[in-house]
Amino acid sequence: MSTNPAAPETGPQPTETHPTLPSPAGDAPDPSPVAGLPATPAAAGELARVAADHAAGQLAPPAPVHLGDVVPAPERVLPDPAGDFTLPPDAAIRVDAAGLDVAEQLAGWLRPATGLPLPVTDAAGPGPDGPLTLTVAATDATAPALSGSPLAPGAPAPRPPADRAASAGTARADADGDDVALGDEGYRLDVTATGVRITAVTPAGLFHGTQTLRQLLPAAIESATPVAERWVLPGGTIVDRPRFAYRGAMLDVARHFFGVDDVLRVVDHLARYKLNHLHLHLTDDQGWRIAVESRPRLTEVGGDTAVGGAPGGWYTRDDYRRIVAYAARRHVTVVPEIDLPGHTNAALVAYPELAPGKTAPPPYTGTDVGFSYLDPDDERTYAFVADVVGEVAALTPGPWLHLGGDEAFKVPAASYRAFVERAQALVAATGKTVVGWHQIAPAGHVDGRVVQWWGTNGDDPGTADAVRRGARLVLSPGNHAYLDMKYAPDTPIGHDWAGLVDVRRAYEWDPGAHVHGVPAEAVLGVEAPLWTESVTTRAEIEFMMFPRLPAVAELGWSPRSTHDWAGFAERLAGHGPRWTAAGITFHPAPEIPWPDGPSRVAPERVEAAV
Ligand code: TNX
Image (cartoon, rainbow, N blue to C red; front, side, top):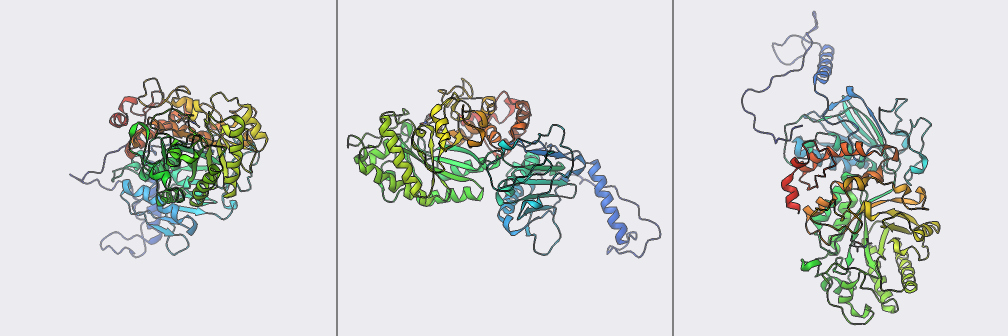
């Protein structure tokens, strides 16, 4: 694989190497406009072109990426070595109206490195069929099966029904697993010698398909400037859809504040790996990061601080709208968290009447937890909660609102439970679905409630009981999914209260069978939280996310039947050069067989991160 930027051509130019067929004798008059060339009839000329293309295909080296080299692992992969496709210089992307925005995004990713114009054209309009076709089909009927073909060697077996994402669409899978419904987020990708087609039922599915396409091109596709490369895709078919409907990551913007551009970049990272939720931890003791018009002091006063005296900051309503819209375009839903009743020191500094003692505490820039709380016995607390969740809900198009609920150690159990029940009702009144850390489990059920489990031993009868009463679960086990845990003892940033989380530990667990007494059907999905007490820069965010974020993404997307550490590590290794080309900082984890060896992978970037 070459990652060299294209250099100006010097010396002799390469000559045409395509073999050509001799003209048959006795041809009809020369249709060629070029004087002096031997006569070649149209039909024979076409024959020659096809033969030449075929021969070139046979002579060309195989695609450097294999069809199964995708993270997260696709549900089915059927390689066809004769079907490798090379992007021609005049390639256009044809798409129907529903897929237009996805096609524009795909073109935007492919243009910088290829240097090709890659125009996006309307499939309904005039013009030839381009080699790249994206189709949003109205129904699954247009997502044909792998018509009786055997599964690829090593390809995953059809998954059991319990694994299926809780998504719309009429799932069909016959005994051979030959026919599948793509559903809300699935796609089918066909690569043949003459073109590439992605088919999906929704733009979200199409978008996931384009992320797969991107990964199948040589790693140099991530370059921001043109690269001399043969842009070849491996032939065959992928039919793919998620195991879980909720696949997310959390960014704590309260302990340290991260500006809009940093958040947008995190959205891009999620989208690459088919994660579809970004949970923003917007408030904590050290800072309040979202403007609330009815309570301006929350940001004016409470937004000024951060851990260790670092600069504070907050999102205006327009900043937040920008984040939400950017995420939506990438089929990522923002989940805002207002952490209540604990983790509220910044709010108490701004509005002391909410504090139990009715006096403002000093601003807090340390990293302890569990000391602050809103006064659960004061009605002004509930007016405050109603104002805040009302405004945040109104700014948020997604269905979720996270009310925190963790580590309110100083609130007696009965008061805590009563507070959570009132706060849940206030969230429900905004039309949003309640999400909360698993400490909210003992509170009464409210329609659709989601409990986010962050324990470390898989054993929590309270959470299992909440599930029996109707809650669904998002899994973020601290000892597997927490991105703020150190990889190893010498990781320069991060915590270790939940243990060390190397890439293998991030990968080796099953969200469908993790919490005792919780059946797979109750699991909505997975989320990898990044707390930022010790994370201060964009490079450090990436260093903690990569390569563990793709590990959790695979647990959320891929059927359990594909789960295999060695195979995952191999596939993941191929992403190191992609991250390097894209300028993404990552931890060169020693357990991953990086193509150039761990020490050769972007060492300067890793140093920059720590
Ligand atoms: C626990 S996880 C917390 C956070 C900390 C984190 C550090 C959870 C719901 N609460 O307040 O930032 O540990 O790892």
